[in-house]
Length: 215
Image (tube, rainbow, N blue to C red; front, side, top):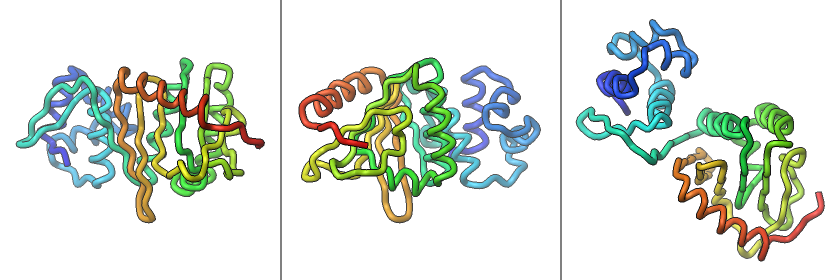
């Protein structure tokens, strides 16, 4: 977990005021000031949120309270709060138009961790952008729950080749999902070259293996 010293150093590297960071975190500037000075008790989830903000901005945190620039940051999301934050990022990347490829999609796991109300909200806002988007989703060939049907095209993968290791490619980012009974963990690589390579592999699976399925 990052420390107040690392927070101050990270903000100094970005050369932004406390108000800028606080606005992006959705908290008051004086609250952030107390957190940075170590004068406020902060939950683990809040500290993780602050860390992810700086990681998205290109900051890497090192041992012994160090910070450095990271040209290709790995962003970590955990649990329900994390997966919702991930889909908020997908929406943000989609606002100006985006190509999205989802491999090994498991609708039941996504709705389990997002919650049906949150996913409905996400589907509605993505549907409003569908003219700007190209969304392709590969699911198991027997899947019947097409939760993104209002804005995405589906194809089915043979059951013998399918697993629940979901890969989400959006824009220049690639997210790798790990599901368990107790948690969902997502690691996102912000790397244009990796995203391009994964899109090529997805395209081969889409064109050569996946089959059209009826909704």
